[in-house]
Length: 336
Ligand code: F6P
Image (cartoon, helix red, strand yellow):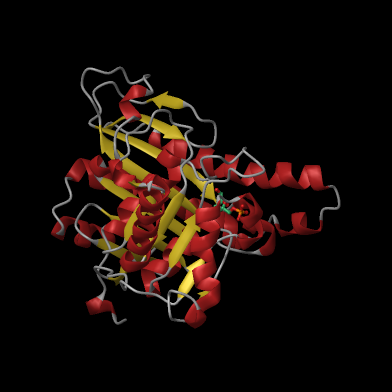
């Protein structure tokens, strides 16, 4: 892209009518993400891949999340327009400024099991308006449906450091230009294709799924010989940010279902509702996709706690609708 065609993040957000306070918070988050990107791309932790002591290894990987968390918190804690922040890392609410207009929740490093294989990881965040009558220390202020998100995004630390961002005016993708030290618009107004030939799920866990989920996923595997009548390819990166980025670029459907047959630990799925599921659902719906937490549209859910998990099916609209329809049909048959 030649210099004159480049559009920087500030320009794009101003064009979208993003309020100055919100823009300033987003830019603070991103300055932290740039630091995280530098650490990750330096590869200075790569020797850990060969660490024979697995327990120590996990601790060190954990440390990278903690480092990202500290970087972001240190920058955000002084922000005038933030009332409070919530991080998945410690599950704590940190009060910032009682008069701040916004709240920010974030997952400093999603997909950490990918770090030692040089795979995809990312920082996920979402911003909502604060509530006047609730204290900045209260968890309750964060408990609101995804529909009220003012901005959601994630930074993907891949071969290129990319930013996926929406302020409710479509979803756009930016890349981090090393030359300018800033995010430059790469793809404007993403539209996820309604149909797809790619599905994404940890198939190794199907033994734990309820029968109806197994049946639905079997349709992808049966392909043209099943009810779907077309062949699908399986794509699985083991990183939510990686799956969502791919879906935004070329469509697809990703599931992390509830598990309830033999092992109940993930009876509500694995992914955290507030820190991961709600932001990515907002991003995907702004790009013409759809996101359901089993029977309910994700953005209509009122969370009960910050640590709550939710099952997720997300991506190309027709595929998610097919799931919802199959589920309803299953229920009405059961009632007959
Ligand atoms: O929640 C963390 C996470 O790494 C997500 O990024 C990813 O989608 C999921 O877990 C992968 O889980 P599993 O290893 O069980 O497939």
